[in-house]
Length: 286
Ligand SMILES: Cc1cc2nc3c(=O)[nH]c(=O)nc-3n(C[C@H](O)[C@H](O)[C@H](O)COP(=O)(O)OP(=O)(O)OC[C@H]3O[C@@H](n4cnc5c(N)ncnc54)[C@H](O)[C@@H]3O)c2cc1C
Image 1 (cartoon, rainbow, N blue to C red):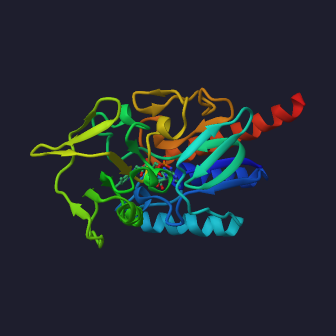
Image 2: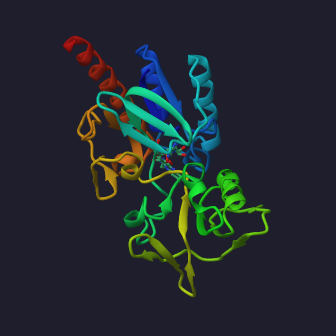
């Protein structure tokens, strides 16, 4: 069992990982070795202490060198669920499960807002995980909204099961090959249905579907972590970055504005210290 699972490899996650390592904690860190699109895509960063007028790429290189020097590993997996199991958490990455005493959510904010009806139909025809729920749609018709090229293999997997797959791809250089995939232009405006999702509405058309997959780099935290308290779309935290769930902390953009590197780094540090305090209190109580 890990002391902590950190979810997300943006600045908040990086800061949390560096601090937990310095505090000698045993943790697992989920995300990408490329860190975060939001680090890579910044042209010039002028307000991060110690790094003067760097590009996002230079900043990522600096982080990479620091993490390697500290001997920190990134587990390149997307987390599909975080479940409180009494006094520990099970973190699900498709079929793989990892247990940790605490969790730091540093998942950033979604670049694509949920479509109207999306959250209402989660678990009732709307899914965020192709490998978890794809089997439910064998021989059926599905709609997929995908924000990242790196998630294309999940669409191919769905196409190997479903009869028809409609896809809205919000990235460049789409290279989907399966014959039963039909690419659509335009964003859906609404998902509608009764007991489960039945139709996806666009400005110029309606699709009758059996299921919807939202394949995104970041999933709404309350969908990822059942029971998590959210306020105005952000995870509600106190000054120690603690959420309403005991042992679950959150840091960075996902806790609210301002969306800034320095704020994310600060909160990652605070959350890591809060994890260490929480673990120490647990030991003291035994
Ligand atoms: C173009 C651009 C320029 C910017 N310039 C500046 C600037 O000059 N100065 C400044 O202070 N701020 C700037 N910002 C804002 C800054 O990028 C963000 O505030 C910062 O990146 C937030 O860090 P974070 O760690 O909270 O989230 P993010 O950087 O968004 O990182 C979150 C990470 O978590 C990962 N993740 C999400 N869900 C999961 C999951 N389920 N499983 C595994 N991983 C997951 C994501 O893929 C991502 O890698 C800029 C942003 C953009 C887009």
